[in-house]
Image (cartoon, rainbow, N blue to C red; front, side):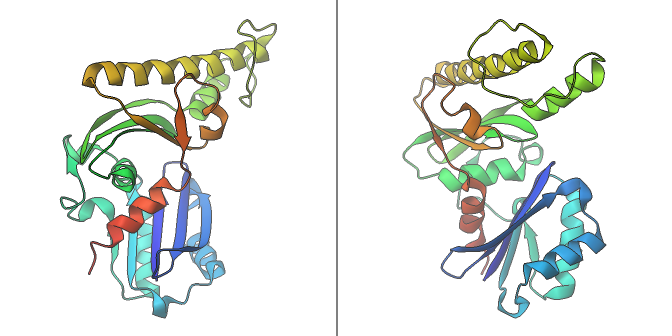
Length: 248
């Protein structure tokens, strides 16, 4: 069995995966709440038989959190804990960017989809809103835009008269009060941003793409933009499963 995990800026997800690559269990927790005591309690509640674990792989954009989890798991099992970017990924994907500056979660997502025949744009609604461009077997780069929730919270924190607002789909563009005006700005603003960036990627590359969406607001926007998209909530874990096969 394998322990596979995704450590994001906001949330950490850990999966127990069987030898035939079936997800058996999942846990998730806020990354900022990670410490040795809480981690130990979480993993004890996960009820893993560590004697059966033969591979451990994480993608992480929070090095301190990865090191804490790695330290904890090293006390429970002698199996080495790998971070994606410390593995040799050349047999899985070509990376045409500054390797040190691209998140391992984004590389993992690209590996998840790569099939050497199709082109993909991966739109991930996380702490940041990211667009990653995969042309056949090559990760060619991407775009990082402000995350929706982060931007909403920042606006309310910096503007005294704007309260904390949950984003909702809104039919009319012109708001009649502060809340509807903010909701309109974020809903229609991000819908326009998404469609325009995808349009510009297609124009710049001269290629067609299948667009995959994932992350927190993916359900919210999948029917609210002009671009045809497919939803894939398990894209990262599927990429980690592919990557784990590199470990002998």
